[in-house]
Length: 172
Image (cartoon, rainbow, N blue to C red; front, top):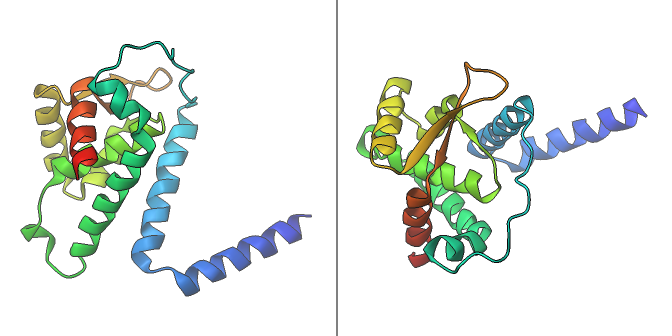
């Protein structure tokens, strides 16, 4: 049985190597890292929410969150592809990259660790931490500590952040 699994895994890796670019493989690795973060923190999907919320900007975005997250992924990926042609120092918008990452994770109900968000920003950690502080000061994100490991902090969009990013994605 283990040999069959190993053979299937090897075949999958061979197909990836043949058909995927290094950037696509790195994106997959980044996704797997976020998944591992979630599993490491005993992440559980959010419990179902009441369907009787008053309609407002937030509920409209919540209803369409997965479609908007796909738009966010396209924008995020296209921004990464630009860096293959143009030096990164000419294209800096780390806060926007963070907001896109947080929205994508929000749509799936996942929390994002500060370290994962720094990686998603594609800038030095000290710069990313300054942007997180500015986004928090502006009410776009909030930080919280892990219940399991006090050394781990999570960052998530506030309602204000969800509405701002979701509205932008909905309009573009």
